[in-house]
Image (cartoon, rainbow, N blue to C red):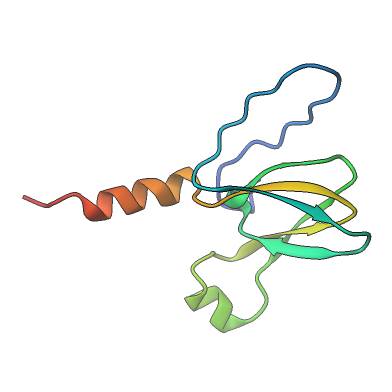
Length: 104
């Protein structure tokens, strides 16, 4: 979480019962196959099953770091397992709203 730059909390939940999670934008469920790897911005990750391998890595390539818009680090997820991603993390949503508020 510290290196991901998004200020998120990684919390393990187990057992039976209901869980309420907050996500912004479109919520996408993705089933990862055995060995399938997906790199995402840390702020888009909402939840994952315990069998997903999780790692924060430095963004490869100077151009990606400078012009990619995701910062220095990305989250790498490796299957098998299920992940849930949000389309618009809270910081991005606030920036979009603020951009559209008339100045004055």
